[in-house]
Amino acid sequence: MPVNLQERWSIGAVEVPTRIVLAPMAGVSIQAFRRQGRRFGAGLVCSEMVSSAGLEHRNEKTFGYLRVASDEHPLAIQIFGSEPRAMADAARMVEAAGADIVDMNFGCPVRKVTKTGAGAHLMEDPVLAGRVVEAVAAAVDVPVTVKMRRGVENGSRACLELGPRLVEAGAAALTLHPRSAQQMYTGEADHALTAELVERVGVPVIASGDVTSRERALAVLEQTGAAAVMVARGAQGNPWALREIVEGESFRPSREEVAAELVVFIREAVRELGEQRAVGFLKKFYGWYLGHGRFPKPFKQELVQLHTTEEVVTRLFAAAPGAAPLVERLESELPAAEDETLLDRLPISVYGGG
Ligand SMILES: Cc1cc2nc3c(=O)[nH]c(=O)nc-3n(C[C@H](O)[C@H](O)[C@H](O)COP(=O)(O)O)c2cc1C
Image 1 (cartoon, helix red, strand yellow):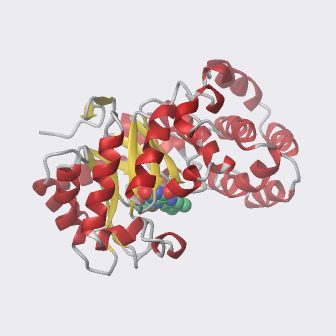
Image 2 (spheres, rainbow, N blue to C red):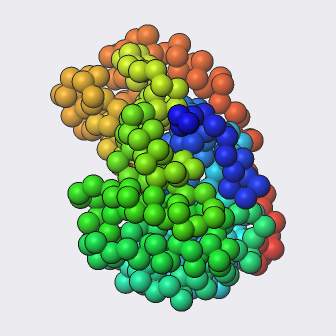
């Protein structure tokens, strides 16, 4: 039977309206990115990885990752750490913040994370990995999920042994990015492993890695029997790729549409991060949005040099005057900021009151 990308599926009791998941990406998957992803057809969106230690120590910046807007659902918030009790506490905060799913990061290859026993290190420590999942699953009512790599070393098949153990410990779905931690992002994702994992577990599997087109999404789903595909780098500055994957039509956005989406994204990022942090955060997005032959290269160079986001917005409107009414329409369709679950509305008990 041909694969239908617009089919509903579920993780526990959480219904996911399409078979496209927008990936967690550190330094990228802020709320603005997730809301945009939902608008363009992602059935599920995910926060970037949030440190359980940061939540435990009531780090203000870490708490900032727990903002949830009404148009994000279903939303997974991803936590990382290796200490079962701290991960369980973090999961409670994530649930209280309004996430529909608590996802755990067992795939981060970065040494700063793995040396603490977290991220991809857990692929090599099945006993601790199982304890972490058990503790998190026992702490919350929402479904808990795990995102894995294939293992640490090149050629590792650790995910095939670990996956079923994590399901036994309480994972309601698994995501597999079938590269080794050593590979980082080089080489290719080996989805033959994803197919094997699907055979071994009775919960939905999400296939992550190298899905950038509808053709590839369909091929991966067919090859693996996975419940959904996850899109990461392919969606950077390119929400139209999500729409194309889900709906099947080729979307070549006009300059006006590109500029309008970028302006809305900039304004949302400023609201979320504050002007000072947003200026640096946004720089990489200019290249991502304006590339693909959409604007001449020097234009991106020019935007990166500007000191305020307001100057960037002014330059974008000057380069694509027709973008202004599009921005107005997009902004009128976004839910008001008051719809957001703000941290100060969370029950004090979650934070221990002080
Ligand atoms: C910039 C960047 C940041 C990422 N951060 C995370 C993260 O916080 N948590 C996670 O589980 N995976 C993270 N990933 C991995 C992606 O979710 C995804 O599994 C990987 O990029 C493969 O998918 P792709 O080929 O579609 O990019 C990150 C990837 C990139 C490129």
